[in-house]
Length: 353
Ligand code: SAH
Image (cartoon, rainbow, N blue to C red; front, side, top):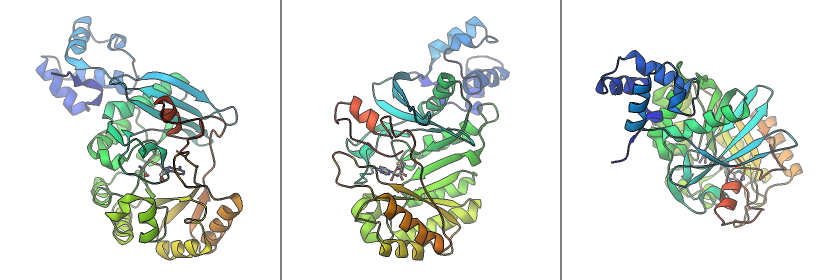
């Protein structure tokens, strides 16, 4: 039988484990703080834990770590891309971005993805598997250790659909905000989803102060269906209802991501339709010029088109920004590094993170 994963256990579970091992409950908190607060790389670094208990922990549990395969740092803005190998050989990507407000890490939630968005590199080879909570946490821990930079913000916007790995995502969010761990404020966390309606509603019930980002990308069902298979399952009406529900429950303003694809969703008429859809909503729109992916047919909208689109939204008093491009000189965005290493794609394949 596979050993259980120590780093995916929350404090309450660790207390139970200590009981089973015949240890005092306070050991659980010490161990939790070593792993999730001090970010030890090895059980042997837990200096106030006896050698006997360290040995027991090693024998009883898996201690998940990531192997760093490659790191690329942008000369332009310091953005760092990391390629990690999981214990079973699967590869995942994470990104560290430095902003004025702090250091933000973009993590992957799955190895691959099964959502099938037509413009996205991460979904081309399908879903390999869900990431464990420990594998999501370790992306942040490893980058903080490696870079020596305190991570203050996290965006779950790398490879994968976080709401397709709901239970592990939730555990990750609770553990990363835990006061015995890195204690990152929920307000500094963003979860991006392609729009799995029942999960949005379920997540609203948690009432966490996390920012929800919705990959909208189209102003009507027909267009959205042509870009994102998930739109066949949930209509825009259902999606917008769920977004309003999330706002009612949490008081958190929704972010809508809208990737601009030349000639697909970037016309004046599209902007008007989008304004109609979002009218009266407390939200923010993030425009992202599509990053062309070698195997896929979409091209990004030009600067002028993006500016015009933005101006139309602004005139209707919709909060809107065009996303700044980070790390343009390195394997720019999520998906590309991983695919290149898996031997499927040349240098140009790319996906915005
Ligand atoms: N599955 C989640 C999170 C991962 S994708 C989601 O769909 O939101 C993160 C964001 O990048 C999403 O908005 C996604 O639609 C967008 N994206 C994917 N490929 C892109 C590309 N080639 N160009 C621009 N944005 C892209």
